[in-house]
Length: 243
Image 1 (cartoon, rainbow, N blue to C red):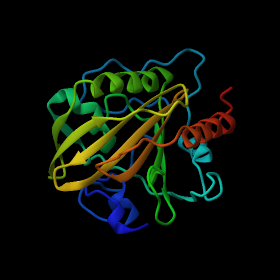
Image 2 (cartoon, rainbow, N blue to C red):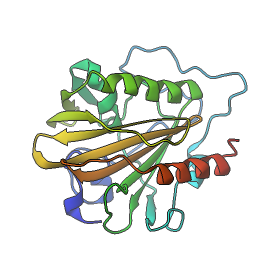
Image 3 (spheres, helix red, strand yellow):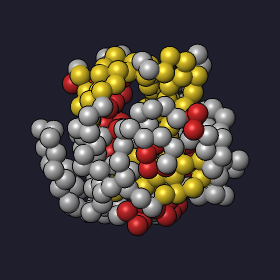
């Protein structure tokens, strides 16, 4: 992957060996049923009596590989994406859910997380990075619903990390793909990168969230296509037996 295709804040950059600065590679919330430590004041994760939580090993089987998306070979990474030091705080707090994409600790806890990067350069809006996260169904639903509300009121915010960095962002809602059980999309601009930013698309499949990130020019940012998001949605359903 070309080093020029990554914004400096990218949560996967340090792990992929592309650039440094904003993220480490360490443990995340991997244990189904565990209650992660959180700085957010929220109710405990809601688990329906018959709900089966998806483990990291199960989630990994649903992650697209080299031959699963036509024209877009993906390479999975075994290392963890974020460490407990990667605690990102947004100011104002109304934008925190946007910043949670970059943070180890989130309002709606991740139970497991796996990720893959595109092998070679990509052409927008094809994603450079795909991340799958598992949650309780309640939390996965609430994340997308809450984010949709957040995108209606968050346009600018500053983000600081426990590791010491401080950055300033702009937020622009994007039309989300018609795919999955629910979806949302936005363009995140970095004040230090005046000509490009990152288009982020989130698609929910049951209790699984698929996050797509693509570095794009600021003039015509786009979410991932309906076809790509639907393909991955169906792959998750098929692999994890979500009818």
